[in-house]
Length: 322
Image (cartoon, rainbow, N blue to C red; front, side, top):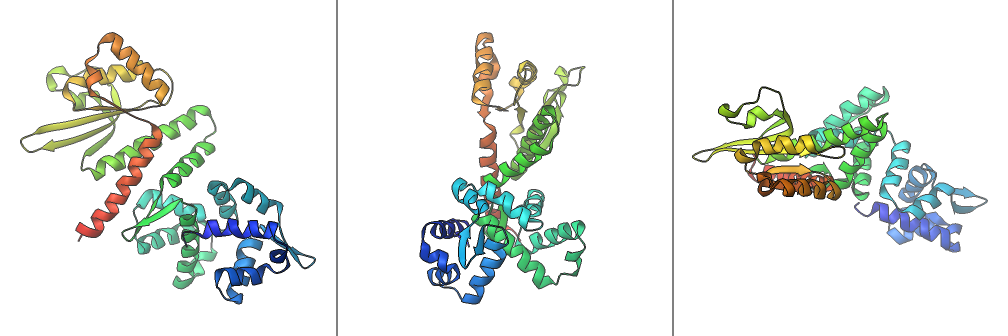
């Protein structure tokens, strides 16, 4: 199952280069993969022909222009685009998992069933067995593309899957400002999931006054993008503010973090390498106390941490859950 996408590319390559395969693709697939002829014909009909990858013309099997493009790019994300255009509600699985991951099979099936039935009338007539087989077919292919993964009995979006979801949301935004807002919110939401796993109380757009002691409260309402808080017995209040700095001026972000530098354990900034150096240069000139508290992460690293968090959550629930 995990090698389906690789096998598809191999078949297309053999078909493009081997005359014997072009003469009888069905027989070659049957012998190469050790499967029955009836199943091979179904694979050809529903997958290769159904997606427009291969055509049978003048008694010869040929790779189509679409198939050649898939073979040349070897890009699982581009293949996903074609796959989701061909098969209904494949993207719905990514959407469902974004909200419920890590999800056991029964939970994923229930959520996806609600999704497909809200989109079309036909799925309301599907039997439970047909619903399960339709979902299984799609999930297995998403796993082979590296967009969905599975551990300890539960499914979740891989780092590539999260990146794809963000790309799609950004592409749907009509302006550059809205695209940036989508990316900003995406990171904030992921920080919330990560913080919750580590048993922090996560506050999105938290007030600086929530961090400062009462004796140092501000009259104006200044906010940090995210705040992780935990009260430790005999250890007091642990606080970790986060700022997402994807573009634009960083003066406000620096000022907000400097206000709380003396009362937090660490301050985390999500930004790129170029802006990181600019921020450090400004803080060094000022000899800011914030320098000793700063931790920098790049946006892609947040995706890595989230994936690891979901894996650990799945394992934790499987082993230590009720």
